Image 1 (cartoon, chains in turn blue, brown):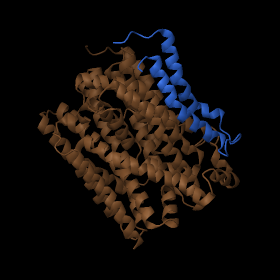
Image 2 (spheres, chains in turn purple, orange):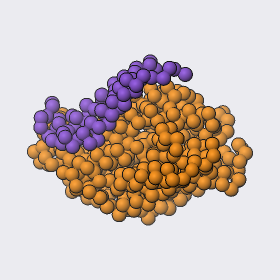
Image 3 (cartoon, rainbow over the protein chains, first blue to last red):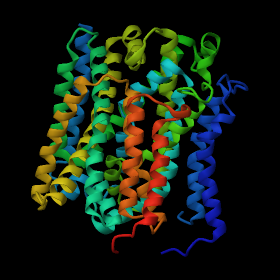
Image 4 (cartoon, each protein chain N blue to C red):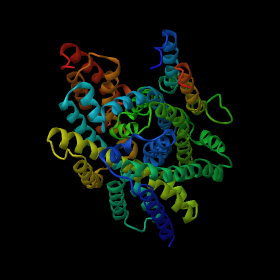
Amino acid sequence: MRPAPSSGALLLRALLAAIPIFALSFGVLLVNRVEPRLFGIPFLFCWIAAWVLLTPAFLWTIGRVERRW
Amino acid sequence: MNGITALAIVAVIVFGTIAFALLAVRGVKMSPEQYIVGGRSFGAIFLWVLQAGEIYTTFTFLGVAGLAYSQGAPALYVVAYGTIAYIIAYFLAPAVWRVGKDNNLLTNADFFENRYNSRALGVGVALLSFVMIVPYVTIQLSGLQILLRIAGYGAYNATAAVIVGFLVMALFVFSAGLRGTAWASVVKDILVLGAVLFAGVAIPMHFFGSPLGLFERVLQTHPHMLTLPPAGVFHGTLWYASSVLLSALGFYVGPQTFNSVYSARSGDALRRNAIYLPIYQIVAALMVFAGLSAALINPGLTGPNVDQSFMLVVQRYFPSWILGLVAGAGALAALVPASALLLAASSVITKNVFGDAFGVATSDRARTRLTRIIVVVVAVLALGIWMIAQKTVVELLLLYYNGITQFFPGVVAAFVWKRANAWGVGLGILAGVSIAVPLAALNIFPLGMNGGFVGLLANVVVLILVSLVTRRESG
């Protein structure tokens, strides 16, 4: 067994998980618009695509916080 | 003539894949553990292939395009919920795996029975899993029928072909088990990726000059499709957010996902897997592009016909061999997940209902044999229901998630709340299902929210209250 994580690490881990979950669910209510477009793609589409692509980085960072890799 | 070319390609792809998978599992001895959970030996990559294989179904292939075709932006909910599901999976899947490994569990119902020390709860979960899997299998059959009818240019009776194709798949599961499904997924994932790149990149380029030219055209002709409708209406922002969360929570508690989680070699294999899986969401995003393209190229489809949108574009504007390849990939997207679903449904019935509740087929040999027989029985049952059901692919999927997500509070409570007991979890599931399923079946959306979400809230409240007033049964 690895040593129990500190409360700071636990909080950071919860935050790292909560941010993309919020951004992809209720967060979308804040960005439900076409403009500004990036490379012609509507903002809502860009927002969701960006968070999908960022999620692996968030999960990998959680693994680092947990000292798994 | 064209129809024969395309259908022949579909047949070669389907039977070729089955032959390949059967060869790959040749000589593997089928104990129940091997047959149902692959001997708990899959590493991160094989697991990724299996999970992508069973997660990206004909729903991703046809349903996402259909929803984008008819509504536009609301189809993005699929891209979002899968991603959130992997975040949850990062934490939940290794914990579930550990319990499964330590206690030799085979099914999702085993998990409930073991954690809450209640056989009755295990049997209840098994029966509900079985009932909810049937609409999910039905989705695959509806998808397969659409693909075969279009590949035959409408000239052949697709119903007969669906029945033949599906029974062949049932016989495949009968002999090859979960490991066979994983090998079939290897072929399926590669072909589906090719078909999706064609649908989401090549089609927009062919008609609009570039994938981005598509958005320019949609903005001119259907600007409302590029944002979500307001809160409070069907497909509006609240529907989106509640459907995303509901489906994400339900994602890893379905009986077939328990099988694939148990099949992992280690908890870290599941964690790495959760990190890579969001990348596969590109597939769903490209199908949104394909659906929007079809809305511009071939407008006018309504009701359940929207699921045909992008396949009709392929049929009308591209040669029959391309149609055959795309439809073949789609047919695998229906059949490979269906094989995992059949296996999961039969394993809960064999293990938790026949075995635990009635004491039938408890030896290893008898259990594998009964699971195999029930695979075929479930297949025939699903065919029967499919022939009378008339819903779009998306509606059927939401029906499935409305029921299956009700398992989520009980799975999480097993790890985070010691006072949760079988009464609380069981009555919570019952409350959730009896609210969520009627709302979904009747298309009622309280405050514009997905009905399953309302059921889930009731489920959690009942779980907490009942657990507080009843005593945890021994242990």
